[in-house]
Image 1: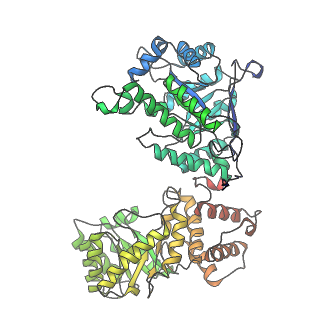
Image 2: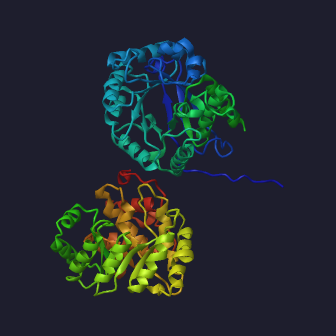
Image 3: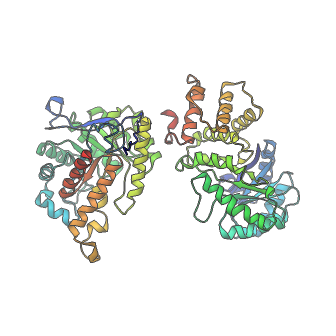
Amino acid sequence: MPIEIPKDKWPGTIHTVTLGATNGEGGTRSKTVTFGGETTMPFLQFEAPVPHKPVVAIEIKDHKPEDWSLLLAEVWGAAMTDPAEWAKAAENAGADIIVLALSVNDENGNPTTPEKAVGTVKKVLGACGLPLIVFGPGQVDLDNELLVPISEATKGERIVLGICEDKNYRTIVATAMANGHLVTARTPMDVNLSKQLNILITDMGMPADRILMDPTTGALGYGIEYGYSVMERLRLAALQGDTMTQFPMIVTPGFEAWKTKEAKVGEGVPGSWGDWKERSINWETLTAVSLIQTGADIVVLRHPESVKRVKYAIEELLMA
Amino acid sequence: MYIIGENIHIISEKVKEALKVRDSEFFMDLAVRQVEAGAQAVDINLGPRKKDWEEVFPWIFKAIESVVDVPLSIDTTNFDGIEAALKTVTKAQPIINSTSAEAERLERIPVLAKKYNAKVIGLTMGASGIPIAADDRINIAVESLIPRFVEIDYPVENLIIDPLVLTVSGCQEYCPQLIEAVRTLQYAWDPAPSISVGLSNVSNSVPTEGRPLINRVYLAMLMGVGLKMMIADPFDKKQNEVIRIIENRDDSSAVGKLYLKIADKTAAGDELSIDDVDLSDPNQVDIWKTVQILLNKVIYADSYLSQ
């Protein structure tokens, strides 16, 4: 008996967003990355064509982080001590985008200065051809102090500046608007707050195709279902036509997964947990793939093997 | 609309201050003004008063009853405080606010209500909290709350069921379900209990300036499904105007006509259509947007009106 698969047709579309600018476009990137544009939920290609694939970013830091797992230190090796080398290695590992997360202090323990931060960003842009996302250290004053000169020094590159939050978005949005960049807006797993921040940023005049939203998520086993549900709700609202939720979503499963005991710790855990490295990579991969299923357009990862597996999963799901 | 005036509430700074200095005049005046503004009962919530209940409850109820004749609603979780208030009240049949379906309260409160011939507000909330679905809330009423009162021969007509309004800011999925709960509860038992809600809860944690409109629009929807009693602010003139418009079916103004339409469509199980709205009138557009968030059609955000 033939079975007819029910198909939804949605009135709303997610904004198509392009990151990075090539020589001809006013930047220096060797390629740009375009995502978004969805007209249905993920991997339902029988309902509507998938205009752009979800993309994978690799997170690097301005200097070697001391609190990252030994497994990450092992796999990136010496490249971790030099952001330019790290970016190059990430590009080789298959990243579509580089996320450069700045630290509060430099490698000598002194506060990160604007000059130093701008220098790091330029080094990374010089070392690899991928589009760039820059996250400030996550402190209001310091973020603004670093991100404004970075924005000015990279005018035209179409980088993403983050992280806009409800307590601090005006300065970041203003400098991104002035210099042709994009912003990412983060809210703590709450649909109302997520939409509100999008409205506030849009009210400042930021064009809709230069806004990403980060609804925040948890790792597998650590609240992923809450994050998943919030993202699903936002995406369904967007497809139903709510213009203030129609932005591509970026999430950081690498950051979340590598915080968990299961990924971080190799000793003092039950033997039945199995091989540490394999478990860690599974944790990051499964967290990321789950979030892609609920509409993530960019997943930010840390381990190159996870990148490979997540990209493989995306390809397989697109062929299904 | 039977309004139980909500303004004597410990959450208010003025109330806190007046209580501290035992300013009876303040409370008497606030009660009288609520009644003058149309309240048919006055709610008194001074918190649990765990340490001074023996003194505070008789004092406040005696003072307020000396100046108003309407029923007083004893709003506290303190069981001894409730009894102290019940012993004090002599004029109108008081209201105990409230019991939930949690075992301990449901064991004791109905017995007390029967003993002192008080009305009781029963919340559709069990040990595991407030269910989202209307049907689950009705089940709490007909399987736990009402049977317990029937069991002790308490007249169900004296029972007031409150299916619990939750805020559109954070509990949006509850908002349309509450409307259905109010609709169905009226037919859930014979004789029917009264139904009451705490209206302004729908806009908890909404910025102050945005609250009255959300309250009013929700009120029109709830009146559509038959709400006749609520705990609310009797001083809210625009809210009272909506009550008047719907009760008198006054369609002489454009906005009034829209509120009537909201009530009628909700009554019929329909939704307001954009064709019912004059989009050139900003007030009507705001009402339309508010209906959309209350029906959980559009995600609420503090700036939802500017979208």
